[in-house]
Length: 247
Image 1: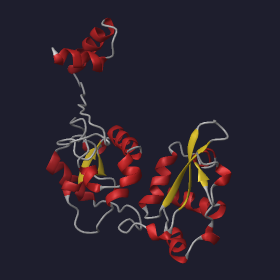
Image 2: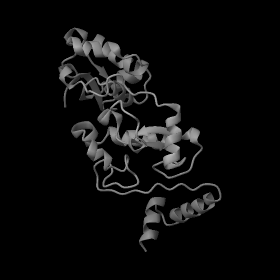
Image 3: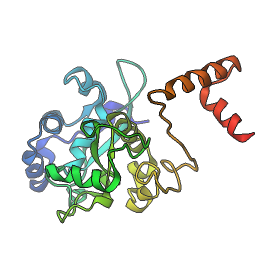
Image 4: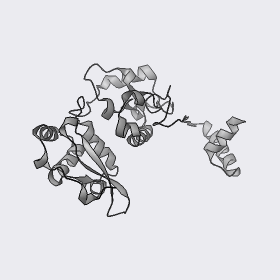
């Protein structure tokens, strides 16, 4: 594992003109905060993102930078504060600037959400639960950081509707997936549950299948009964349901 002091910093003075110009072009507050810190200090850590800037989920701030096309190197180091592994980040080579991401995510036209609702219904793509449309968020099926945008017409097939909980779960899974971190193959993403819950071959690279169930309204009584039965059998609800279905 790399020691923090062994990492070569990448402050502004070490960057070529193309990288520096791209860094200076970012206006959104969260990625700009990260960029300015690295430009000044040459490196930023998860501890600093949390302690100095109050970001409870540091990888999201780092992802914002990458979504603006700016390549970063992730170093695994030991936190002086916790003694655990954490991320430390420096700029990567300018040759790795990612086309199609410069400028970051574009705002969706207001009518595009209605197009998606007309295509898929007002439901969470992961759980299938019908929701008031105000609770649904537009998300790229293939993470923006991998596929970017081609600046052409928006195709509903490239997007999905998720509620905040499903969106967070998808982000966490993607951020820890080997394909997201290393291979960055859009085709592999498209075959994943998180991109295509309707028809998939793996979940974040693992040979797995899943079903997300939601009990609502009068169905809650059935859920409580199943939960009580699972507790009486000294097992968790998921295991209990699998056993019941396997009979």
